[in-house]
Image (tube, rainbow, N blue to C red):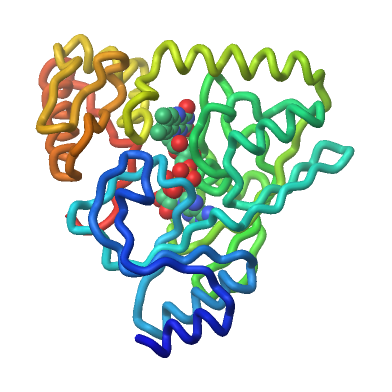
Length: 301
Ligand SMILES: Cc1cc2nc3c(=O)[nH]c(=O)nc-3n(C[C@H](O)[C@H](O)[C@H](O)COP(=O)(O)OP(=O)(O)OC[C@H]3O[C@@H](n4cnc5c(N)ncnc54)[C@H](O)[C@@H]3O)c2cc1C
């Protein structure tokens, strides 16, 4: 394996060895990962796809890890973290090109400061732009699908590809990329509209306040645990089932917002999964509604 480290060094690819999924996720849960890579360019991403394949290893792509639940056993795959794919530029016609690893909060602030509207909804979403395109993240009536023009990605052979408009197959928390987790989003072109900075900031502040009032931001979590079932609100179904505050070990249904499962300190992946199954079963029995998990599992069960 020393020769592998030599190859990483030859390509000047920053990496960490022997990490945990807990360190890489906002849920702060999950066991060991052998390698985490932090490529700084598309060329380095391409090299990593090739090098990992040569070592017989699969790569998993992660942004800020704000929508994942790591397994206690960790994951066999190696992780490519997009943090350093961090270009950001905005042209006069409102087309903003953003590296996959830029946090949505930063992209939203950048747009607001430049007097462009369209990303206000994303300001409080604690992920990256790459993760937001993958998930078609959305909030308060806004969603990535409303602003994504095109996505630049690498396929599983490391070839550069471009996806345009409708080909993203966006739907509620759905995208082309969810069907193709083997593809790496490297950057995204967003179409924003000229607006008034003061109004944009005022909307951002208002939405931030609504989050602080309603969401348990003081605890580690992965946001809303479940997708919104058609015609219902997951949080209300869970609350009406008497599960607010219910806990298994340190995994708890938030007392502030029943749609969130939170980590009270030392929750394990197994406790969270048990809690999720318990919620799904209870809501199914009480209301006949199937709750689909929005949080994505990472690693072996
Ligand atoms: C407190 C809190 C509030 C939240 N509020 C919202 C909300 O209002 N609306 C909402 O939609 N979500 C919300 N979320 C969930 C989460 O922040 C979003 O889903 C976010 O878009 C995930 O981005 P990420 O970079 O963290 O992705 P990650 O969690 O790192 O990854 C999520 C998935 O995307 C894939 N992925 C990530 N980056 C790439 C890439 N560059 N190329 C290919 N695949 C990639 C990963 O493999 C994984 O399957 C919230 C989460 C928290 C903790």
